[in-house]
Image (cartoon, rainbow, N blue to C red; front, side, top):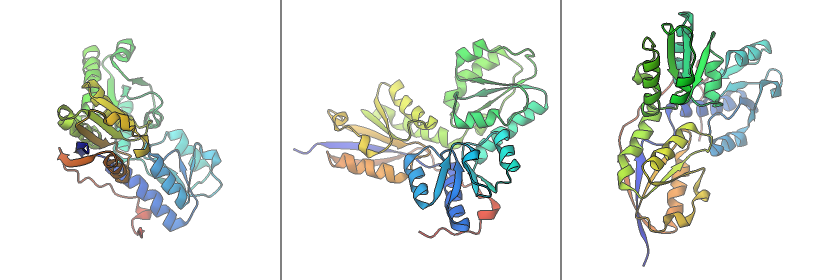
Length: 316
């Protein structure tokens, strides 16, 4: 007798507007200027996306000194520090900035607080490229905190002139306890409205919460170095659901399906929908599936492209 498994497909999932914009920037730059175009760091955290763009002529580098003179240079969606921007200007590299507009907004908030002589606390993950870019955009003192213990250890001389900002790939739920701890320690601290938290991060987590009490297994499609993808998996783990973060369908272990009746499937904000479709096909090779789409929010956000690329058409 063929095994039947119900799959609850969380929506929204996968690409957010910032990721779509960044990928489109690289594709249109390749059409307008011809290959190669050089991209500092992964344009977004996903192997399939990076390999697809590499096949079209994008060259991914770690640092600007790997880029030849006069070559089209694209900064990734995570944003870059002022020193990197100045290095590019010093070499007269023709730059197209694919920084997510929500990340740029955080940069501006931090710069505003610094201009008011406030010490800035950044809530984020150590080593994340967005965090490194943001810290390098704000003049003056920036303190990085990742949890409540970091807040306890925080030493700020002026408890009145202090502000906080957050990494965009953290949700309201991720930051609530840290913000509460900051407000307890520094009652005068100022920070952004919760509406400034990345809509995509919040929506993808909300979609998982909507299915979490109905599933036996959670599969998250996303890169291991993707902050928002890891958080989706953690939601399952925290709710005592067997949860796995996988790059693609090849990482599915059929043993995970043993004694499972309902699977929740979602994808991080950098994961293309084709990876989800391939995962569903792989599960279907082991069992008959009943697929149900569970929608918690409708997303219709679209970010503008840089002006030099608005007239370029992508031909599929």
